[in-house]
Amino acid sequence: MQIVLIEGDGIGPEVTAAACRVVEAAGVMIDWVRTPAGLHAAEQLGDPLPEETLEIIRRYRVALKGPCTTPVGKGFRSINVRLRQGLDLYASVRPVKTLPGVRTPYDKVDLVVVRENTEGLYAGLEHEVVPGVIESVRLITRAAAERIVRFAFELARTGGRRLVTFCHKADVMRLSDGLFLECARAVADEFPFIRFDEKPIDNVCLELATDPSRFDVLVMENLFGDVISDLCAGLVGGLGLVPGANLGARYAVFEAVHGSAPDIAGKGLANPIAVVRSAAMMLEHVGHRPAAQRIEQAVARTLENQIGLTRDLGGDGTTATITEQLIKNL
Ligand code: NAI
Image (cartoon, rainbow, N blue to C red):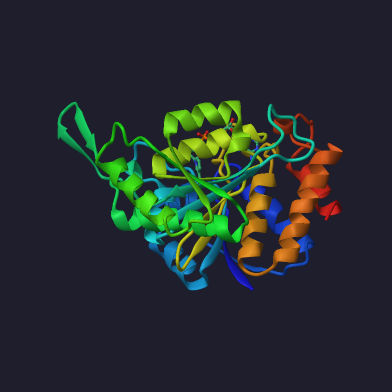
């Protein structure tokens, strides 16, 4: 099976290499099709997301991606935003679950953040009205709003989940979130067997910080989803643990929630678990559910045993030691 691999920047090459080793050890032979994106691509090819990289993903349809650094102030648009828009990866899915052995304030977190990936304030529509005044467009369309809410309900239905919470700020952004809310309510009517709730995003933050167990599937627009994804990662032990997928009708790109972590890049300190679990989601997506489940069990055992863990998990190990443990525990 051929799957595209984007190593990315910073800790990207370290954590994606670990993920490839774990996938192989789980018994799935993948012929990785390597293609560049990020700083290397910007330096060598003049574009951090070359059209050829998009073409390769279109050809093979599924990719595992390490985090990419978008050069700031050099006129480049975010690679991740371009990738998601270019491939119409309209749904970002981040499952957030309490893991064994990881001490956190709450022990019953089990939720999924579904984020609209192509519009909102990240549509990239900004301009200078006059010097000193910038206008950003918060784009919400009925078509994109309905499809992301429908996606969240379908995910709830197929995943045996009971509640979908739509997060918004419709009291302030009355037109844009007003339309999104109207769409959410209409789609919710199609799924009378799944509970629907609608909450202002600030209330959601408060409740996530006080009792995250009350949430199941959360669905929201792009910027809210970006922020809530990191917040939820913090609830279960941090960015080094939470996997993610960007899904569209034709293509799928799997990646961790975290970025390229320049502060620890090249030091062997990165926790590869988030990318390893993203690879497990990818295996499930392409029909290797048993291998995906074995990887998840190996992650649980590794965290429980507390051997070889990286510093973000309170250990004194490295990317190499934790990867060895993951492979041993498969
Ligand atoms: P970041 O997620 O890279 O780092 C935030 C903090 O978490 C840092 O202290 C870092 O050391 C730590 N951390 C992150 N991942 C870790 C891991 N696997 N193991 C241990 N510690 C980890 O966020 P930051 O610093 O805001 O962004 C750095 C760069 O990454 C930026 O250029 C940003 O644009 C890019 N980025 C890329 C993403 C992607 O490609 N999907 C997502 C988020 C940011």
